[in-house]
Length: 192
Image (cartoon, helix red, strand yellow):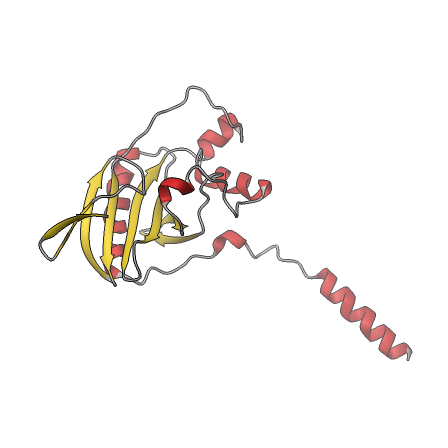
């Protein structure tokens, strides 16, 4: 009987002594399997490094199913974390050494920016992510909601439309990730 109790206590102490110090939740990356998407992201990463010249920025990809066979990936670069509470990223990947943050939209994207998200990062994780991706802003302002001077930054977005896994449309424009943009399908221009 004492051996059983000693064994159970030993196992319990062993389990309690284990920790996950070496494991980082944010170290997991999804692999991009679509070569067209990977190539477009690689080009975007290479272009932006020369534009931002050492300043903090992230690349976010807004993913949306237009239909069961049509997919839209809208690529954006962001220099601040203002939209992260309203529109958090869902997973990340890495292209040419740069983290790419993916946002999965299941409703009309124009409506989802105004809605409260169903999921969001807890405050501690949010702080870690801001510190990781925007260290200069974090060092200067912390996690304040209001930072002055506010910067208006409206980069061109890249709208990539896929039919299955094949890239069928690429459109560059300013706007929101959920905008309807022209796509040439069977020699006919359709806005989607």
